[in-house]
Image 1 (cartoon, rainbow, N blue to C red):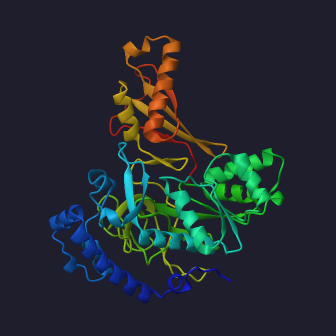
Image 2: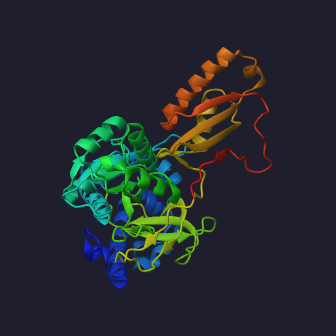
Image 3: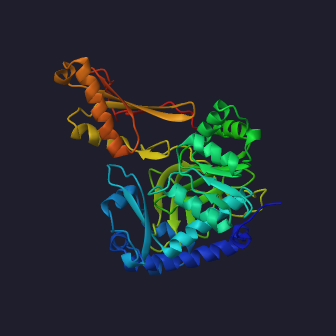
Length: 434
């Protein structure tokens, strides 16, 4: 028996959903055009007015929004409601250190929590469950979103945040947590620590886990399921569109259902911007049709994936997206944190280093590692080993301030990083992510 939080919406006919999306899109375009001068200019440049948008069939006429627009309009340029109507912000790192700041009205928060409640119920969650939330809280959307969804469902909510793994396991055992929400790499680490402490999955009561915020493989899913004795489910979201809960996996574990009453998904050719037919692989684009404070229309996520409307065994009719298969930009997701090579370049230049560098990312014991190799100038290279170690330490601290994570810095001799004829290859990602 499938579990639904909102069966009417989750199992709505395609025809009724299209009608609902069209009504909401028409109203949203009008709202954005009248209240967001930045987006109105984009529409005017494209020669589109709200009157041109009569249904979702006209969606393709609207201009795209990109991360660059979010940077240019930072902080208030895309706000569609007066600040007095906004009750919360969340944030994620942007391409060059300027953060993406997303605003929420009370109603936006309500709808976001509704989406997360659907995800919790889809994995079998009810008011009898004990939901342990080990995503980070604060500006990061993970903790806040699942916390709100858990409260909505009526679970006993443990707002643990991430870290302090032995305490996590202690609470998990003492309070008999049944659902765990965190990043997949942290779930794998909890599983490892549990075994190191001499326990087995039989010593805990978990039945399900909701894991997102970073890429993970089917192999990793099986490993987590085995080490924690659970079923592991995927969840997807972006700070720009609200946070986790844009889409979620059901018991079929064959892709994530998109909450289509709130988000219209398209797949486009990343090079031409042309909308591709269902089943084609391309870049995922989202339009928020219910968000009040920060409604992004045709936002390019840069995630590459496929959408499918094949009938799902759970009975939901919401379109499904596969796990993202990569990116159409150079963003890396490391331990749930967005990292752009351009951020690293910014730090190097600010600290007086050459922009000849190489980033190597790997996954060791289910935890992402990041090494940055930086080429020294002949003058810098003449320093003593002690000086170089001290410089590596200082550079690592500057990187942590910019990125929010600690990379390992290696200062290397001049001309050791291979030059490239075309576009410089800056990233070597050794993680097996698909």
